[in-house]
Image (cartoon, rainbow, N blue to C red; front, side, top):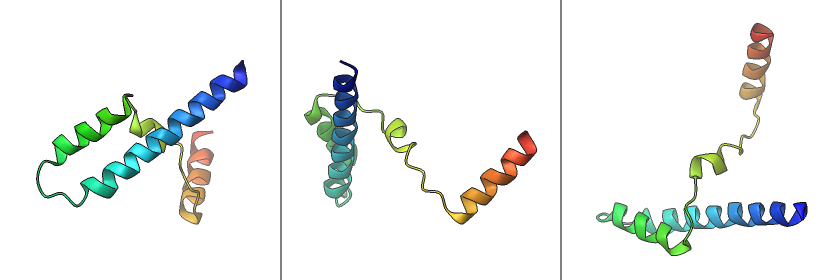
Length: 77
């Protein structure tokens, strides 16, 4: 039962990625009616996605972010 819920959550995340990518692939070339296109494209999926939550987990550590995290941890702890 728990694995099925995990699979559903993963499918929802991938669907959100697809909707976001499609919205940018087609909508970025529009000059007018970008908001109407965005709302229509989001409505095609039939689900409401929280894009900030999906992409906030995608942090790629670099030398700078690792250094800053180390310094912050030293000062906070």
